[in-house]
Length: 442
Ligand code: HEC
Ligand code: HEC
Image (cartoon, rainbow, N blue to C red; front, side, top):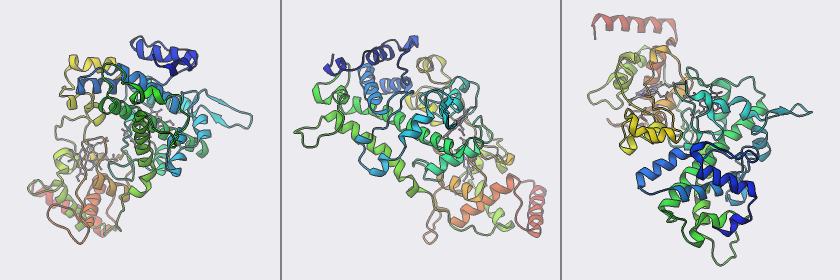
């Protein structure tokens, strides 16, 4: 046993032993409530690398708790973060206001906001697995993968703060995710901080486990000395003067900084939207052709969404959160026996993802032209919806779309959802075009 453990508070040690040793019983130390650990990811690592992860997971949890605190007392590991902007990515006061017990103080400031508004769906650690998650389709987001769908940024980028904040105002139409318009804007900002916190914490937990196995040599047992993650639990700051920095600290710190930096970078990764080109009948027609183009087509929209976005094409596909523990491990999501261990570890039952029926005109991520433009350019992260290849306007070729062509597709999609083409003359031109098309029985 590591010496550092002996200086930890007793109930923390008990918590760790309970969490790591008796997880399947679901027992939990009542004095210090811990975030539940990501056992699904641990099992994925165990299955894909064919190594036991118990020792690594126990130590990862110690580091994560030392750096991020508990649900009652979240902390932010500023001392290990290099960029000043990343140190201030979340505000500690707001974090502590968002978490824990629900109450209001004498100044009528609200506490426990995440507990009050979000935990039933998104779960204590943001695993998307709260008690109300089971009946939902789509499931609430598991923030721990650090992947978000409804954002203004590149597919692989984090959302901006503003993206998350606007999402809370809007909700996600057509899903269980409600609008929090009525929550005070100050409280909403605290919730944004808390979402970012859970996402950073959860992604760090996942990736540090990968690192422990792949880089630090955790297999059956804890590696020696400074490659052991427990060697950094008691440290309170990095002493660069010291002759040697523990290997484990370098690995964990690099990982943490990579994750927080990605959040800081998000505003620079907002997808630029060129000026809207004319929304007229001709544009809609060009968009219709691009949407349906198969032969030599660049983006087979109709192949997934069906002709005119009517969702009549049969598709069988899953989102990345499900693929992680199924198809990526060569397990069929339908194979109940093979999926069972992951279900026991906390995974929700695999559910298919379906391309949107665009003729309904309900957009989860927002239906404005600018938003849909970005949707086409970036696709939807974590889902099968691909990014369309877009060229700089000058260097367009047959394998890429020009910005105008993207706008054409957007205009077509918008008319499918019932947005009229601007100007009545133009509108009737489209209706004419449509009746011509029906007459041709295409
Ligand atoms: C009734 C269940 C429910 C509640 C309550 C709820 N959510 Fe959600 N949330 C969802 C669902 C379902 C989704 C997934 C929507 C999708 O995949 O399009 C989601 C998605 C999200 C996303 C991800 C958006 C993206 O871009 O990928 C965020 C962030 C989020 N919720 C934050 C919150 C916060 C903060 C609260 C509390 C203030 C909250 N949610 C309360 C069900 C809920
Ligand atoms: C490989 C299949 C696939 C292809 C190809 C595809 N999509 Fe999608 N699309 C999806 C899926 C799946 C969703 C639902 C994602 C979700 O809600 O999580 C979706 C959702 C959408 C949405 C809804 C966005 C919202 O806010 O609700 C739009 C709009 C859309 N697609 C447009 C297009 C267009 C335009 C193209 C062609 C450029 C296209 N899609 C190509 C699979 C596809």
